[in-house]
Length: 484
Image (tube, rainbow, N blue to C red):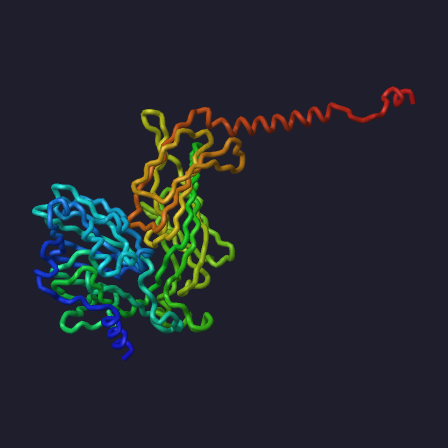
C-alpha cells in the first residue's frame, strides 16, 4: 500500500507534461526529434546513463551547439559527462556554461518555467560538417555516484538489502521532444516496486521500460521510482593517496593509502559473530568481506598495514602475467562502516623509466589507483623524482583539478627532490586507466650528490675525532708535572 502511495505522490508532486499539437510547441523552434535513454544500475558503485538524441535545429548555425541540462540536485553526484556525434564518431566538446551565456530563447524557456537556478547547463559543440539540414545525432554518456539509496536504511544482519533509485520518466531538456522512451536496467531478479504509468510501462526480466511519450514540452519532469533487491556492497573510496618515488639506482617505490566507505544499509543494533557466521554462506552479502586486485608481475616487496590492525589477512599469487593480491579485514565492512589502510611495493625502473634520443628521462605510469573498479572521490598522486632532476614536463591524458610542484626531503636528501602533486576528483578505471608521462633532465653527476655528501660527512666525523684526540685542552702545567 505504501508503494502505491509513493507512486501517486511521485506523479502528483510534479506537474505532468501535457501532450500538445506540433503547431504549439514545435513550430519555429529547435527540438528533439527522438530521444532514447537507458539507466544502467548494474554496477555497484556508479550509475551509467546513456542518452541518444536526434536533434533538429531551426538553422544550420544552431545545430552546432546543443544545450544539455542536469538537475542541480544531481550535479554534485555527476562524475563525468561526455558526448559523441553519431555521424563522425568524434567526441564533441562539452563545457559547463551559465544560463546567461545561452541563446535568448533558451533563457526565455528557463524563466518561463522558473528553472534558471535549478539546472546545470552544459554546451555540446559540434563541427560544421557534422550536421545535415540542421539535424545532428548525439550519444551522451553520464556517470553518477551516490545515487542508489538503501531502503530501508538499516537492516538486520540476516536480512537482504534493497535499494531505491529515483529519476524522471521524461527526458528533462531545454527543447520540446517529439518522441522519447526510457529503460532502467538492474541486476536483481526481484523488483519490489516501480512507479505505475498505465499501459506505458513494461517489465521484462531485469528491465523496466517507460514510454514511448510523444510531444513533451521543454523542462517536463515526472518522477519515477524503482525499489529492488540489491544484496551487494556499495563501496566507494572517500580518499586515495598514491606516492611514487623514482630512483636512478634501479628501484621505483609505490605506496598507497586507501579510505574505504560502504554506502550499503547499516545494521540494526550491534554486530554479532553468531548472527554473521551462520551456516548460510549468502548471509550479509552487502558487507565488504575482502578486496582483490591485480598488480604487475615484476613487483617485489609487497606489504600492507593499518593503524588498528583490522586488515589482518592477505594472500598474493604470482601468475604468468600479473600478481593477484587479496586482503581481508578482521571485521567485515558493513553498511555505513569505513576502513583505511596502506599498501605498497617496489619494482625495477626498466619497465617504467626510459631515456630518449635527446637525453631526457621519461617516466611512464598508469594514472589511476590499484583497486580501479571502485570510484575514488578524492585522489592525490605524488611523483617524487631523484635529486638533481630539472626542467620537468608533465603530459596528462585528461584534465585534472590541480598540479603543483614542490621539494621533498627524506633521509640523505640535501637539496631536495622535485615532487609533483596531482589532484583529481572522482577517479575510476573506465575513465582514467590511462598512462601519464613525466619527462626531465638529469646529468650523470646528479647520481653522485648523495654519495659525495655521505663521504664528506664521514670524512668530517673522522677528522673531528682525530683533532679531538690530538688536542689537549687541559689547563695543567706539564713542566711542573715532569719536575715532580
